[in-house]
Length: 196
Image (cartoon, rainbow, N blue to C red; front, side):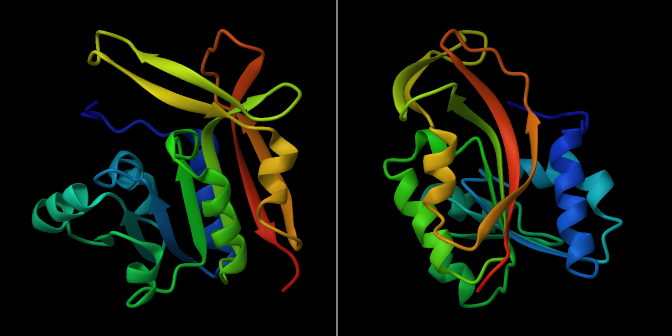
């Protein structure tokens, strides 16, 4: 999908600005599964006013190679892992936008994030079941985009937050408005570490 005209996801933008304000004007983040930095490029007109931005995208090797070759400019950098990113960057925030449902081990990633010294986590455009445990579904991509289907997970909210371990609290939550035909909703949330 192309974002030819920048359009802000307002709740996400508010969360990013709040995270930067809490860090004295620094927005140093990992955009895990961030493609070629589409969230940065989509929100760049509004984020460029933040005094210090470091946008580290973690992606699959082929996308990282393309990003490093064609899109590394300004604050955007590309890495294949949290470890590789940590060798040169010091992010305080992790952004997981529409990526957790498609990972083989999303709970393992959340436990890893919880063990590392990040101070904030934003989860956006993620499906949550109304009640019960995680639910694995098949997502059909609309033919107007391209023909495909993917496994897609809907999460138990409490279980997902518990994966981070003790010391994390939910500070904001918002609806994303995506429609689904199961008893679930898409939303976003910001969590902060409140204890070491």
